Image (cartoon, rainbow, N blue to C red; front, top):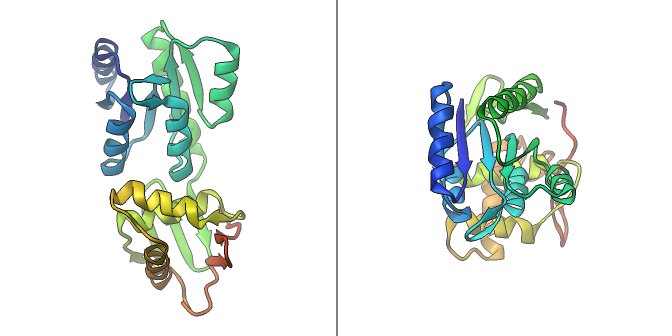
Length: 225
């Protein structure tokens, strides 16, 4: 199992990394919000351990951002011990909240509990003729694999995570910009959606998976899971 630690205190981060590695986990460390985004962009993790107070941003906002585009368990590990902080952290999507100082045995138990929960909950989505395995980042139709670029995959995951609801073009534009690092205009987003439909839809001219909500954005209807 691969874990990402987002912690700006290098002593804590390295000590935690060493302890978790001794328990058999593969561990990477990011020391800031920006560094964690780069690491998450290029790697797949089974769980994230996240501090709240970071030098270039707020761990709460980072948690929300991660949850918008992936279904990965997140555990807050922080010195912020007010009840309001704990409640907020859990409400925005964190799977657990641990206050420093902490015992490594308790942390490992909670990590394993979160991983068991996500393993139990099948993360395979069926929609129309597609089978989408989010954990394995695999899409197939009639046993034939469909290959997506990382950007196409992130757009699809964003739509799937909000299935049944509209995802605005502005939100998708921000996502595309964050990944590419370059300015992306409205026409470019239309091109990305078109390419995604060409790979996923049986009939591009009559899309049944990615629906256009005119003037607002896109929506994927509720799918079987």
